[in-house]
Image (tube, rainbow, N blue to C red; front, side, top):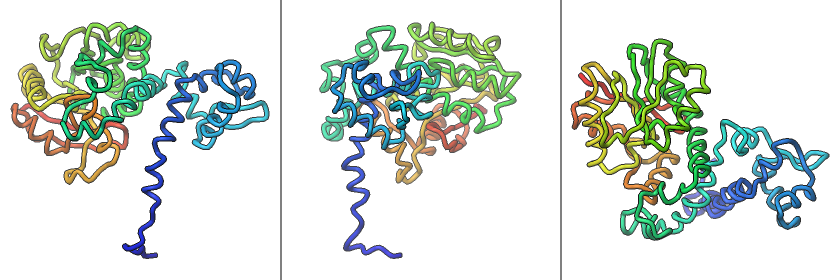
Length: 341
């Protein structure tokens, strides 16, 4: 069947016109505690409205929308969580993404309202939206609970991507992995599980270390992972023959990236390597859409952007690494490996 260029289908335009409504419905349901309230089992509308202190008619509309989105189901005893909601949208789940969802709702949603200004000026929107110059996390995550939930949301993403990132290349020849900005240690844990001879160090800021230690100690490879506090731009880096940076380089300007890459290169022994975990743009930058949308996200909230393999290769080559190899993982993050010759 051929399409008429003069009368193209409006489907994509109509879909995008209402796409934000679907996101906001999920954000609101998480924020209101809908999925948490159903974690122990289905409930009637009347009970849910009382528990959540919500208007019954309005709540019913939101619940029905979540049924339509595939997040909730109707049962004889009321509304219940679908398995995907129980796994990713309940705070009791170790795989939860709720911290990042609440951050998206409370911060990114508001900053994306100023996307036009970000495009005109080429700078993030924290100052315009919240009146903050930075550092971002010091303002936004003022409580330990808020910080923990955000990090656990990122941990949920890590559980989806890290096993595939560490399997993208054969890393069995390396003996010590240093995961810079390793947060909850999900990449180090995945790597040590896959490579029995590997030891790892999770290196992150002091305020992240307690949760990192907690998550590492709860894993089955805790005896091969250490956690160290430090700032990778300024403090001495741990010793290792494989360094990893996941969701790190896309935060920064090229000047800062090159500073960090030079520090890593100088610390690595000959034959060592750098593993980069980021979502890669196609060389023509015509996709994938997830990377394009993430690049816009980096525009509104950081100094950085998403890049192609050749752009990462140029960066790592500048400081002395050999040509970078890529692996598309099919997960939220792809993998790039650069070697020190």
